[in-house]
Length: 377
Image 1: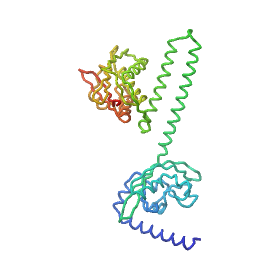
Image 2: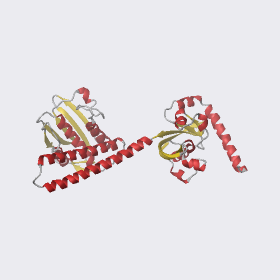
Image 3: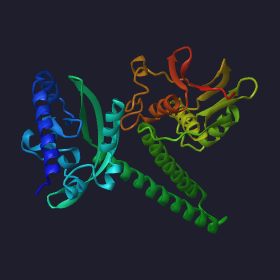
Image 4: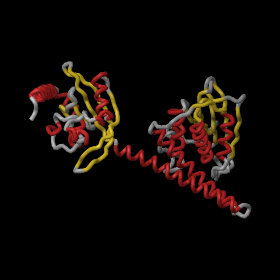
């Protein structure tokens, strides 16, 4: 039984809610637009109760009609265990960490759009299930009354995929490190009585495998905006010489060689050492793969105003139709299942290193990839 005071508050809230429903019902255009959203969405009253929801939302949450979800708060609608336990959403101490509730509170106080992630434990079909949602809450005013549009996007699969990727890269790199360590022990024990050619091949394959794994992990982090960058001053001439030595061990079937000509006095660029090494070695390997037999690949570096310019040139031409697509994610002139090299170069340089990458390919110049980087002040 409700006490008289509680009964009065309950009846007053119900009256307000009925008024909200009446108001929303009068906005037919808004409802039509809302129903066209493919993103699961709801309109909330100032007290966080659902006054309207599109089909995408109530159907995804397992309701048979809009009426079944009307009047619920977000936690009650998704069957959050804390809302079920307390018979109301937003009063349990754990609710202080709820991304949806905090986004709604920000909209209520600041009248600006807010977004957050909500990690929810849901009670469904007799068991607890864990979900991750991206919540976007936007303010909307009707007759000077604040309502909120809530968008609820299930990102559970995305979160699960990222977790599996992190575990995969961690475990595979650990295995590669163990193989490398065991190989070095065996290599030392054989001493001078060892089959050099095969051991060198195994060593090279281990190095290549490790590089491929690290490169893929870096690319995924870069695409997800999660890559950490550590800027420092780097003497670029010496850095390029080191990258050339690295690439000398690359399996170059064309027997191409590098000709590095530093221009003028040594100077420093302001960049991230790991990412810059990845970019330059990708450009060098790309040139080696494209080179004619026994070709000399020219590398030059010079300063132009406040920028450093690094050019990698080989003689093989790229058709003009391909030039437009050379930096696309899945495009390659070398066949299928390739194409991440030049894509990752542009992504890392322009999104993370404040640089620029371009390419020209003509009969007169050959193919020149140019990397621009900021000079260290």
